[in-house]
Image 1: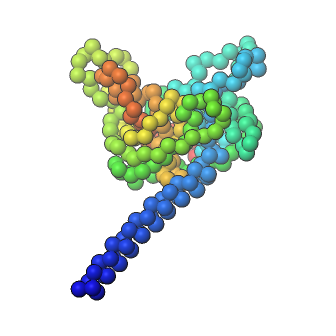
Image 2: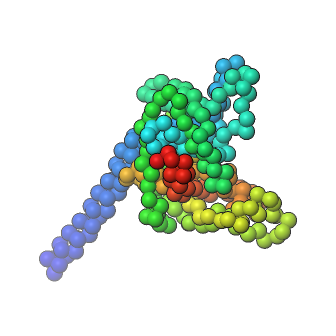
Image 3: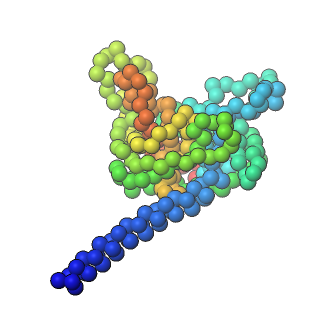
Length: 260
């Protein structure tokens, strides 16, 4: 009887130790991945030498390709620049204890998927690897790193973690015709799937990379505004749901433009 008790005790003890070890390994893995990801995260905005403040933050971006390409959301870009006052599109980079500004140019914009690719003119950075979305499943954990409230607290990237709550169409039909608009009608004609997350992103997170917590491979681009216009128009109050555009649309854009 005592032998059976000890066997059961050992089984429970070993199982508990394994669960704790796995949980610790996952935590350590994310901690290491964050350190690898952060040098590739930039703030996206504009720079005007005669403005106060000179930098204007609009969203987040991340480095891909040969280290000169920045991926962000199309809606993050300004509608126009004040050329007369020397306003330029720029990214802001955290390097060690210092913050730097780098001028970029708009390379290609895909308004359908709300993706933009920018080109660094004078510097190169460490690119992130683009993952395989066919491996993404509902319930799997991922993380995203960006600037949730811009540069209010300084140029320090912030990381959030959550699961893929659902893989759903980008736009859903409205219950009433008065809820329809031209933009929604266009998206309903050519729907595509997006990732729905249970982690809360904020407007400054638009353009942040959604990545595998162990490998750092990017599987999506956080979208705080564009998708919500289609999926949550029916709601009287905004929800805490966050969405991400699958990374295959970035890959297709890069390949189509001969950038990869």
